[in-house]
Length: 372
Ligand code: PEP
Ligand code: MN
Image 1 (cartoon, protein in one colour):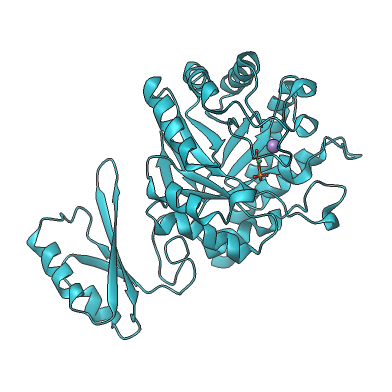
Image 2 (tube, rainbow, N blue to C red):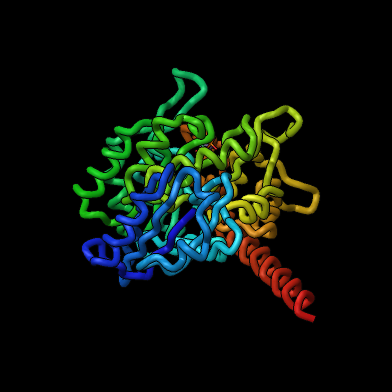
C-alpha cells in the first residue's frame, strides 16, 4: 500500500510526525519513505510493507497529511501500474522529458573511439535538432581480447564535446560501481557540460549488486536493458530493484532476445512488448534496433531492416530509440557492421517522425471510437 502525502508535507511538521507515530504502531507493517524533490514541490510517498490486507483504505485516507492511498498488487510495487494509480509515467532529467507520452532519439556511437568521430557525431546531432546521444566508454565484450572501451580516460573530452554541441543526455553503459564514480568525477571536473543516463546492459540485467548500487544514487537516471535470455517478468523485477533502492527514474529497454529463432537477425526482435511494458509499468520504453537486428541488410522496399525494426517500435508506442551510428563504420572498434551512416541520419529522423505521427493518429482514432 502506498500513502501519497499532500504536496509539500514537511518532515518536521506535527502532522507528519503524528502520521509516522500512527504507522509505527500498526502490527506487522514496515514503512519505507520516498521523497521526490521537484523544482517547485517535494512529494512524499510512504510505502507500507507487510500485512496491509487488513488495513482499510478509508481509514488510511483519513490519516493526517495523506492525500491519496493506492493499494498495490505484489508485482513491481514501485514502478508498476496499480488500480487507481495516478502516479506519473514520466520524469525529467537535465531539461529533457522522459515519459510514456513522448519520444527521444539516442543516436550515437556504440563505443567511443576517436575525438574526431565523436565530434562528427555530435555535430550531426546538433545540426538535426537532437539533444541526446549514446556513447559507450565501458564495453562488455564476449572476448577478453576484444576492445573494452576507453574507460574513464575518454570521459572528460566526450563530456566537453557534448557541451559544445548542446547534447543534454548521453546514454552510457556502466558495468561496475566504480564507473558511476568515474562519470560523476569527470562531470564535476568538466563543469557538468552534459548529463548522463547510466545504462545497464543485457548481460548485467540480473547483476543484483550492481542494480542496488546504481539504484541507490539518484543523480543519474537509468536505462535498464532487458536480459536477452530471461523472461520479461524477471527483467521487470530487475528494474524494480533500482526503484526499491530509491531511483525510480528508469527507462526500460527492449533489445531483442538471444535465440537462433531470430536468424538472420542478431537477436529476435521483441518490440511487440512495447505496449506490454507500458501496460504493466509506468516506465518509458526504449527500443534498440541496432542490437536487435545487428546487420545493415536492406529489404526489397529500400529500407534497411534496422529502419524497419525502429519504425515497428515507434508505431508500437516506444518512448526512446537507442541506435548505433558511425562516421566510418569500417573503422569502428565495436559493432561497425550494424552502424548507420551519418548521411542516413536525416532520413532516419524523418522516418521516425512519420511513424510517431502515425502512432499518435492511431491513438486519437481509438479514443474517438471509444467515446462515440
Ligand atoms: C549496447 O547498447 O552497447 C549494448 C552492449 O547493448 P546490450 O546490452 O543490449 O547488448
Ligand atoms: Mn554495440
